Image: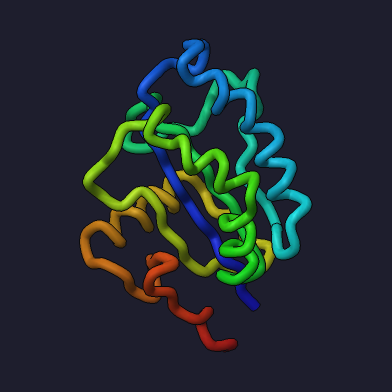
Length: 149
């Protein structure tokens, strides 16, 4: 059996203590709690607000990293379409730079497997280099989990 892993990253326009990004920072806990209560939620990376080692991708600490695992594409899609999540996404341009590369990737992981940030970055690189494949894809073109062996 497999679960769906997802990574999305965003390059912050401001430091997290800057008042211009305060609405986003103040909403993080509520959005994460909403995800955790969602049907199909399995796990998320939680470095915690006081962590000395926040996750870093591409060697750049200005990226905000969201890495989580869900039971299915449908479960994640339902959360992404929730009003709480959409309210934040509508304001994304205020807080994050627009990037001309993919910032979101999906892939299948075995049940009880926890993806790492390094693995997630590699999956995003794969999607950027080759487009959607069974190893790295998006909502626009998803793939079923691998056949049971």
